[in-house]
Image 1 (cartoon, rainbow, N blue to C red):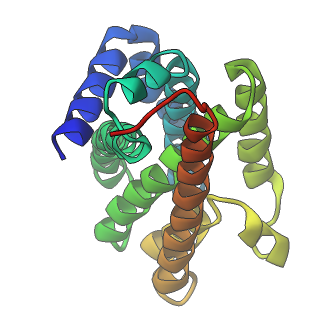
Image 2 (cartoon, helix red, strand yellow):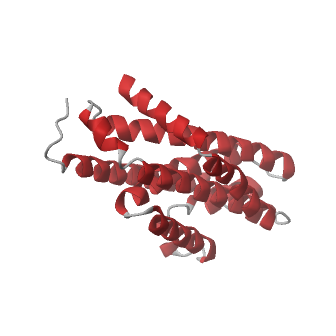
Image 3 (cartoon, rainbow, N blue to C red):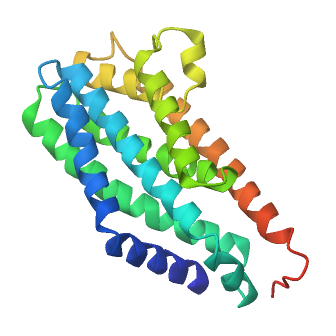
Length: 226
């Protein structure tokens, strides 16, 4: 537990030193939100996708930037789970702070029937975004390729009709379902199906990204974990 928390602290310090990342986390969702400000449901959905994009990008850069230091941390006694869980906890904490900020903005600025659903949706978006960004950062050679893939995912999320079955394969499908419930009530959206989708997707992404990171570190035969 101590090593996990130490890794989380190191990740948070890294984020605080990177002012560009912090600016991205704060400003990108605002740009998305203002672009559809006159339509409550669309504005909230775009703000949520902006949070998802910003947090995923921060996680992507964190994963790519840690490639040199993590093998040395592993040699010093950190296990793959310490590195992965600590980094994930730090990124989720930062993302939840951003989602809380935008929850307040949305609830104050828009007329919604269920403010609690708005808070839940933005929090779930963060929980999905972090392992998505980490997975992309682990499987691509550089952050540029990861950023392009992430832009493709967000773009597809915006243009594909959420009512199609294929849309459920996208990681942020839950945004539309929960936000529709928050704005128009239970007759138009389903809180249960949106929440279930987000939890399942987050779980799958966590398992996938954790497995990739563990396999990558353990492939180095000269490393001995204690």
